[in-house]
Amino acid sequence: MAGEITETGELYSPYVGLVYMFNLIVGTGALTMPKAFATAGWLVSLVLLVFLGFMSFVTTTFVMEAMAAANAQLRWKRMETHKEEDDDDSSTASDSDILTPDSYERAEKQPILSVQRRTSPNLFEITDRVEMGQMASMFFNKVGVNLFYFCIIIYLYGDLAIYASAVPFSLMQVTCSTTDNDSCGVETDAKYNDTDLCWGPLRRVDAYHIYLAVFTLLLGPFTFFDVQKTKYLQILTSLMRWIAFAIMIVLALVRIGKGQGEGHPPLADPSGLRNLLGVCVYSFMCQHSLPSLVTPVSSKRYLTRLVFLDYVLILAFYGLLSFTAIFCFRGDSLMDMYTLNFARCDVVGLAAVRLFLGLFPVFTISTNFPIIAVTLRNNWKTLFHREGGTYPWVVDRVVFPTITLVPPVLVAFCTHDLESLVGITGAYAGTGIQFVIPAFLVYHCRKDTQVTFGYGTVNKHRSPFHHTFWVGFVLLWAFSCFFFVTANIVLSETKL
Image (cartoon, rainbow, N blue to C red):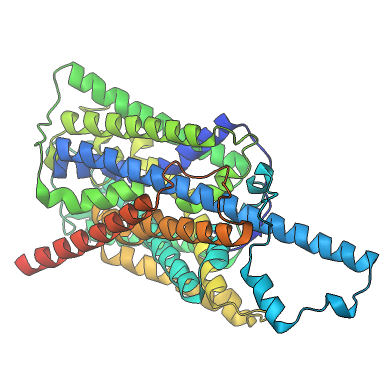
């Protein structure tokens, strides 16, 4: 995530943008959602999912409004610069043109535009890709900017820890869950401990650590270089993702239709709310990537409606995936990574399909890990950057990549509890990015717009939730999430 204005990129239609947003939001979090649903109960899970989807949509419109305001500010500054250059070329300054300190102060306090507000609707057109870091620099003070980057960095660390544990965990489950005469993978009622044997004298946890070491050695070096996800790699991983999701949903529906469904989820179970909250927040995360998604859309006339349609489709998909899962499998048999539930002969007859679903997270996550790592490294650089300064080679090429790679690998070494990792990342850093930052961004961008362009100026991409009440409501909800999750963790640890 760059903290600067970047190239817009090749334009695409609004419907292509809708597909891109769908692909961005529906990721790793979706694979941990079925277990969270089963743990918290289907009714409370459905209510919370719909509510969090709505709240995420609200803050998405906040970010789009802030993007339009940032574009207007930049466009107006360019217009002012060109005007000053034209004035310098056409005339020379006279004594009467020089502002006294008093008149200068009055000029600074009044709006740039006159009372007539000669603003064009095109002034708020989103044409420059202004990343969230740049918007934070435009609308926040120094403390706010540092807190923004701190929140982004913590979230990306959580992302990397989830990825670093998901791949070795999937490989361990697929390769260690087979018996000598059975290649079906995870057995129907098998319950494995990390201390169980995997290959010969090696325990399952040893196999997990070996896979983690190999994963780090293969993908870790990319952190020291600049990499980006190519268009064709994105198409390939998206295709694999949708094939996997479609297979899982169809197989679960077939089992339920045949009367082989084993799940009897409760209506509600408060003990599962903490992880469900974090998983749902994590599963709707897209705000940090909106500038890259929205700016290249060729026509933004009905942008808010299309985004709303996207959220409705995503809600329907999450509901379908989770409900088929919790009624197909018993709650205590659902795996942290839902794909691993299909590594059973009684669920999937074809060995190739079992292997594809079992290793699906390995392929898709492995392509994302270097991208997220480089993004985190660049955010560290931006956070400590000073105007006009450069980093020594050792700091730039060794220190920053190292502090990027080591912490998530250490977390993955200590635990592979994916549901908790996703839950904590979503409930803390995810809540900050999805709720707190957009709320403060839109609040300050509205104030800046009024000061710059005059009161009554209307942003053409203004959020439908433009009343100040919604900003306060989002912040209240965010801090309620922080308090609830923290209290839940403290109480859980006290009981232990």
